[in-house]
Image (cartoon, rainbow over all chains, first blue to last red; front, side):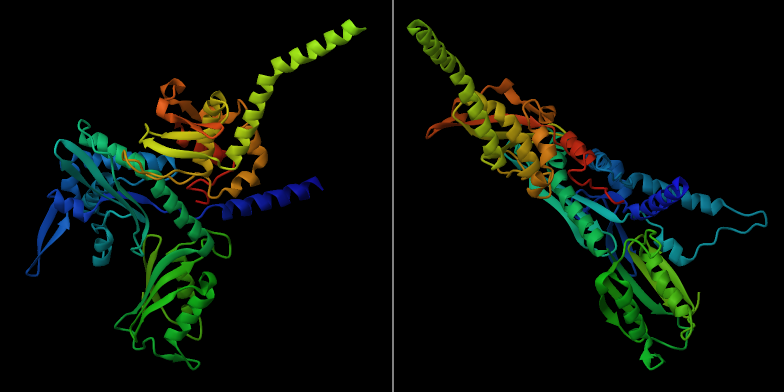
Length: 315
Length: 176
């Protein structure tokens, strides 16, 4: 009898542990393009005749001690709330080190590390939630104050999920780093309250992701090809209807060659209680299309927790 | 017999005279607690506190200024948990309460009865600024009672962590 109770208790405990944790989003503090432009940390490059400007994070991190201070303060306060941030500086260093290592790495037979153009493109400092910071110093006579903006942006949907902003008290004597630290302390709680609302919504209505379905040129069919009297596009939409939380998704674009689904709400756990992300969600569709009567091969690619692309036709 | 009666009456009067301030203080304390539960106090931001704290001024109503000063500490912690406060000048930012709704107080009434009892755990999170001295403009007579403004510092980060640990409020990383 005791043994049975022990087995039941262990089973309940392990299911509970499995169900216990959803995939935790990663956070990274990044200066806004506006701040980089105002402070001269931009990178100019010629894009086929058009001069374009991009924020130069490396230059910004090397040139502004205030930026380091703000990033360190926000990261410290977020770590206190259970969300240690990825550090932009370390991510950039990691990337350059990794690419140097990849360039040097060879097997005994002399072959290098395989890397497709898309792999190269995806290699950038990234996080699931970007904490974007902007500040400006207001000077009125001898008085100084700081206007501070902190925005939380979902890296995949591009939506602002939290923000806090305001202007601090003008001061005659306080130095800029002190004013900046005060600004962070004054705004972080409101920011975290909104972040909490975002997480509450996620737990209630599922994680919001973006899904793209494309086709390879080599595949002779398209999304208008019919299976048992139904177009493939319609079949895919029905699969989304059945597998999203409360059937929530938007078909933003649908052509013969391309489908874009936005505001797709996926459950945080699959049928076995395992944490789910965009990749595991779309793998369900990949397997569904692999089976008869469709028998379609496809390639699955992801971008973090919240963006996935399925390209039908081949691997 | 008459003498005994006189003694008895006299000692009763003396007893009531000596007990009366204690009783009235106790009544004032009880009323202050009722006021707190009914959110009858006001909080305003005084400035950005040091890391992990809120620096606020709490306006408390009571017939006894001493009771009001003591009650201010409870009101400050109560306000930070259930009421929040508005921003305004001095670079102050509005802050939302730690609890997601005022109903949390009823849902965990047993916990909060103990927490806000005299000498309860609320004391760990609050300290009077200026040793509790009250500016003359912060001591107002409103009708029959006083409205006393006391500047206090509330250790909100520690308070939040302990409430999260006790399961009263949800942690930001809960579920991950």
